[in-house]
Amino acid sequence: MLQFTPNAENARLLRDAFGRFATGVTIITASHEGKAIGITANSFSSVSMDPALVLWSGSREAGRFGYFEAADHFAIHILGADQCDLCWQVAKDAKALQGMDLAQNSEGVPLIDGALARFECSSYATYDGGDHAIFVGKVLRASLRDDGEALAFFKGQQGRFVQEG
Image (cartoon, rainbow, N blue to C red; front, top):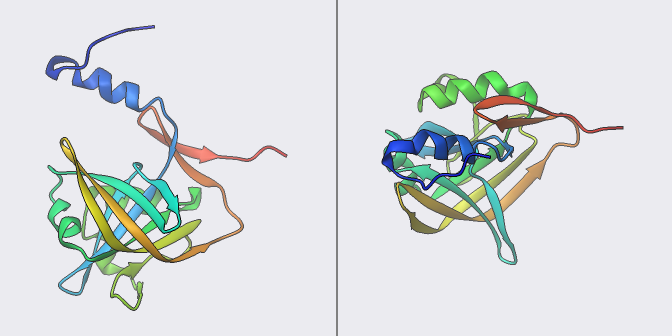
């Protein structure tokens, strides 16, 4: 096992170590001037049942960071394996969703069909997380789908989580 103290010279090693934790993949959506903005993130977690709270982290250096920092509402979509292409489209382009015919919730947040689960949130709190911000959302509405395999991220690669039996 390689042991190291994280610093600027070995940032890639730290990123690789973080990547050893298999995660699901999400797309977070918000609206900016009536247009859909999206960001792909694997930094999602549930926080609390009462009140219902979730969190995700966004890089302050991302060009789309300001849209989410200013958003009063957002939606977190947990992606299925069948949404891998969409995941990469949004990862590469904050405006990739603008060409799609998306429904909007009552707060004007764009909603992606077919996600394994979706959490429609109001902004609850934002915390400093170094070069990231930690966005906590209060879940206003949630939905889930019974079928489908999870899209997973591990060691910088996407794959699928398949249940046994």
